[in-house]
Amino acid sequence: MTEAASLTCPYNGTPRYPFDGGEPTAYLNEVYFALGPGVWPIWLDLADRPAFLVNGHALLTEVFTRSEDFLQPVDPMPGVVPIQGTMLAMTGKDHLRVRRPSARPFGRAEVERRRARVRGFVDERLAAFEGRERFDLVAEYATPLTLQVLGEIIGVPEEDLPLFVSWGDRFLNFSDPLDARAAVQEMCAHIGSLLEQRRGGASRDDILSAYAGGQGADVTTAEAVMVGANIVSGGWETTTTAITSIVLHLLTHGPVPGRTFWDALREDPSLIPNAVQELLRTRPASGDDGPPRIAARDLELGGVAIPAGSVLILGKYGASSDPGVFPDPRTVDLTRPNARDHLAFGAGPHICPGKWLAIVILEETIAALVARFPSLRPTGDPLAWRKRSGARRPEQLWLQPA
Image (cartoon, rainbow, N blue to C red):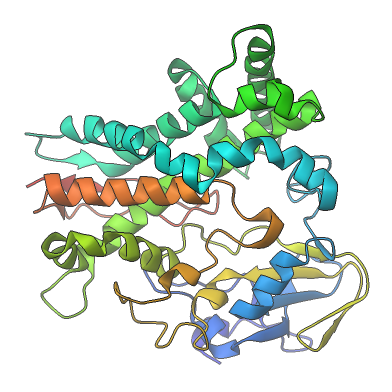
């Protein structure tokens, strides 16, 4: 066991979770490599029940797929936002009923149809940096761009987007549960008013209109509101983080000394789509493994007996570094044939609805940056890493266009 796993339960020696991730720029946590694929008992400080880490690509895929056996916790953030009755906690027919109206707008074909629109947003924002000595990729590009794209697809007016930034920051500030809960309530009330406007006016090509119209006839107002809130709160931070962490890695790392991955993409832009997939595999947007699961009944997984009520931590890091799926997993290979087999967006019925949109945003961002600013580089300003909301990115990333 590596030094990262030195924190263990003093009573039975099982690994203590969450693991010490070390430097934020480090590759996937060493503990996942040391443990290897399997279902491993772990020690959770706050758990009053058995806890396990599900490590490995096949096992994690199985848990994602068996959504009626392994449930989302009803209240992952006590006192803030219980998910009971929302799409996140639903399974089977109810989950399909509530998710169906958003399926087409977020589907691959529809997102590809919107690609030119996304490209226009990207070019407009990057054009503002021409002639500048430097710009902050996080505040001046990644956050506003992501919200602009999400807002248009959901049906949020552009002038309202700053409100969602504020609500999102408050909601993701776990140190103040009361304010986080108030932010959720304010956001839901606002989305509810937008939904009512759709019901009383002309239909538009957006998700709120889909829920307000015939497609959402069997979805309650509360359910539709929570879909909108989940998409905004779950989408803007993760996509902002993915943009930031991927660009940073491309500019500061490379296959050999003296050559960066940015150099490789500048010389061969056709590598960009696969590079995005490989960086999603190796540079997780979140600083944790995401929401746990609860065993609905006594079950078996990977040959291990799982008592009812057990907590399962889904080791997305371990799935992305499974040598049985990704040979030489620690190596970032922009030409890796199966890079897209990562589980950064989950799998099964609860796969991230914004998967294809996030990929298009990332592809268009990298392509435009490489074409417009081929000599892009970090300014060298110290990086202050975000320490809340599960995001794995710097608070700011100052870049020099030339």
